[in-house]
Length: 331
Image (cartoon, rainbow, N blue to C red; front, top):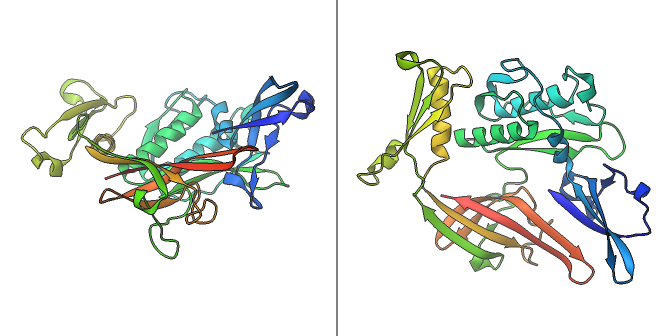
């Protein structure tokens, strides 16, 4: 996510180098475990003076710098039956780290990779010549559709020693689980800490059976099917089918069934909540909640499992600090 910063023009361009870092500290702690890399510079007049308007990007921007530059069907562009979190780390290692066959692609002096944990769903994927960041996002989505929430981040590991940065993965939530225990918290319009609450239900794009077609032709083609049997009783017209082509990689019938099941979960009829979590005296950002936390939102009689995945922090001399977070949840 980008950071924008206004600075007086007495700073020289040489003092604001490309990939120079900006740190954001709040209450004595580095905000969001990241630093921001300067990539855009604009100089504008403000009254009778000039001002820099800088745009810098968090450390995941590093991941936009590689394509999977390996031949199709190679060990670096096609991986089978591996946990999605470990597969992500292998991809980063092979495109940014010491396993990159082209040594000019290595930034292991600056970037380390967290040890494998094997905590996400097992997946199979081919991804030659694709942007590395897009592949990592696909793997996170595949694990989620198969039943395990998975995200990744590039964080500041050390302020003083190399490698300063580290690629990490997280399951279930990026931050803390506030749904139970001593940190238990409820949010919602009735508690005065959620605004703009909206609950919607939609079944217009629902699919209850997915057919995944693998390699082969005619009667020799391999298929996998997944059906949401419980939803077939919702109405006489509840069976709605969808075909996906999964022939780009060799998959067994069982693996094709997993592929179909992953797409099926993504096409459920859903009841969805969205809203904005406010920074209030009784539920303060940085004290009671933070970015990446998981919590329960009570809205119009329903309880939604939510994660704080989007956060806006605006600081000006006129208004001070304004913090809002986007909440999303589904039933």
